[in-house]
Amino acid sequence: MKKNQKNFFCFLVSCLFMFNGCGLETVYYLITPSVTHNTPNVSSVTDVPSYENAYFEFTTKDSDNSSLANGGFKFLGTGIYYKIYYNVSSMLSANSSISAADESVAATKMISSFNYKPLRLKDSAPSPLIPSSSSNQRVYIRLSNYHETTSDTSVAVLKIDGVDKGIPSRSVGSGGKFYTFDFGRNGIVGYDDDYNKIPVRGYSSSDVDADPDVESDTNNYSDENEKLWFVDLYAVSEGRDDTYTTYYSDVLHLGAVCISAAEEHN
Image 1 (cartoon, rainbow, N blue to C red):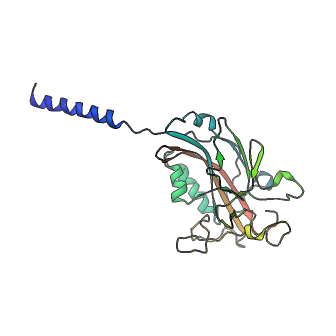
Image 2: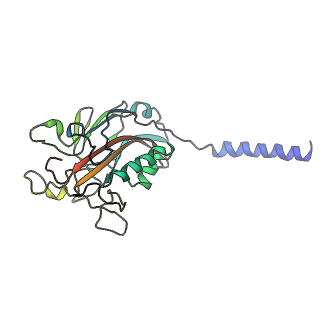
Image 3: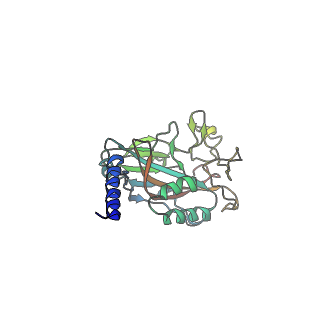
């Protein structure tokens, strides 16, 4: 055997042993939630969802994702992420950028680059918000209340398959509770003033008084009275392997709603 041929043969054998010994890295591909039943949209400060349409509703992909579970991988459930904007153009620009991202990095871009935060419940912080199930789950989310004392169809609530799971809330709070999305409902009977705070704009790591779930863009408010806030939501399937590496599916944009801090019923 010629010297060059012999060296090449030895190289191939070495590679074979190396791959057999180390194994190839396993990559898990989660299925994105893809069925939306109601997607509220904000296109401008005057084109916002009516209160009847100001809710989010979609179906998870638990059935498909649960089949990925094995000794080294666990499907965790479906995370819901939000961000509060005061400028509509900033929100629409972020939507375009996230939509254009490759599906393998869209969730990371949404969370790390655009600072979207996980939606919580007022008294707890399940992670992810929608725990995994063996079958698909229908999720309903209404962030803020509207004449909730006279109609139970417009109360702030998270429901899974029609079952009330609690009040959807922000990722910031105090005293073991998270702030609600009923911005500015202070001094109203039946409401806890400490948890209905108006968001503080312009978050940065050096500004400890600002809120980390509010856009950091320095653009002006979209409305001249500085009372309108726009909350944007995404859903993403989440899993984890035995090295505690988190895996994300592509993201599903659930839409956006407008919340007025100047109105009791917002």
